[in-house]
Length: 110
Image (cartoon, rainbow, N blue to C red):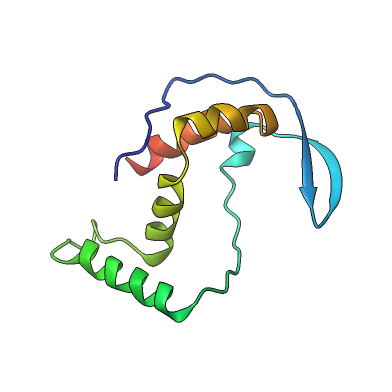
């Protein structure tokens, strides 16, 4: 599951437009803000949850307790796999600091 290596990418802070629930607002983000964890609830079909649980069992088969992966971590990694280096460059215009945040996140999970 290789992820793009963005370590060393330096991005500056700029104003960004946020949309949530149809409203528009302006905010400033630092990369550390973008690393803040947020809990969300997602309704998924049972077959997807079962597939994730099977994948989790495969990943953890034979792994030590220290190396074992939790479902949340597996989902996080699989979501990240869908984001390309080109996506990060494009998103930097809308979410300034995302490149630096991704770099820091990659360093933390390594």
